[in-house]
Length: 59
Image (cartoon, rainbow, N blue to C red; front, side, top):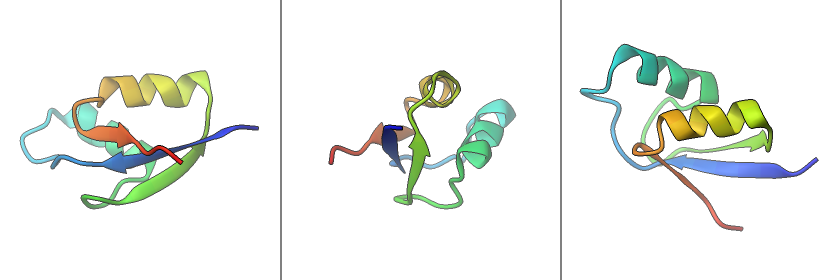
């Protein structure tokens, strides 16, 4: 399966609780951390919810 790399580029401070929980579900613990997930519809939906806090890393 294809994988996708995501990097947290903005702080979670001041974000609503649901967005903080989404970042936790994606595996982010601090800024500039890169996580890798399988490219699925559920992961894409979580990325879309916090798109202003994360960026997709090009390989």
